[in-house]
Image (cartoon, rainbow, N blue to C red; front, side, top):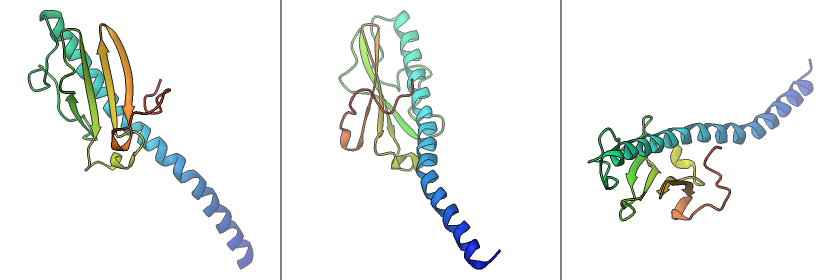
Length: 141
């Protein structure tokens, strides 16, 4: 092979890599979102176990048996939104930790799970706490 042919092959490989890198990054971010989704599901299950024996949902994660405040892979901080907890409703939120590589996911900075009267709504917040439009781009269905 000549030097020109080798340079052409290198240019083609560089172009392919440049196109594949964003797709790879998006796949990695989606897989990290699964950590937050799983943590919110665990909170929901803990809240339902609590509610089965009590007249209202638990207002804080600290008082909810078995609940965590950080997701398993440490990508998200977990909380119950203040003022959202009633006898029939609550909002659980997983917010990206600033120390996590997931912090670069500006489109999905927070995942939310809202339980209201037995109905479950999944939503997310982008940077600046702006709600994402439906259909939500962060929750995998």
